[in-house]
Length: 155
View 1 (cartoon, rainbow, N blue to C red):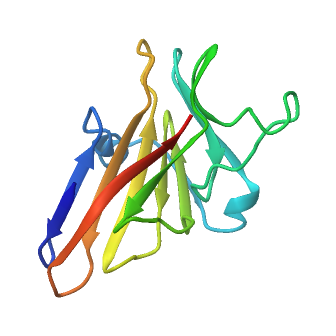
View 2: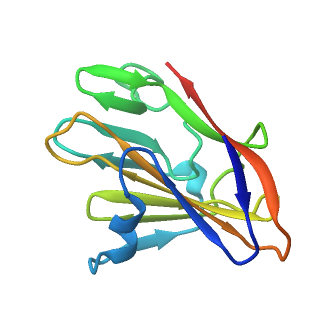
């Protein structure tokens, strides 16, 4: 997918649903942190699917029951993905610099990369065996940016 974003414009790219709006329009309390993200786990869960990851957005081996295999995207009892990463210009995004959680969703803010500020929102709605992943991409430079956006999934 080629992405072209003009100066001061924002593009919202959502897989399957406007999941980004959940976090932006909710009046519910949220909690944010930017310290020790690589040491903290998170879960975004619905009643039929969930994701278990690390707050820096990089899926590390998690779990002691079956060592290192409890993280990823699940539609219990089936593990759908071990991990996934977003690629910008063919390169994986760096670790997130801020993590926010709210009722039913999590948000990860990544450092500005190639002039683009990227926020990833994850949400697992009740009643559906899916994880919705929303991306908000904003050009922070005064120039147009042309790049590719990719998704690399590991089963």
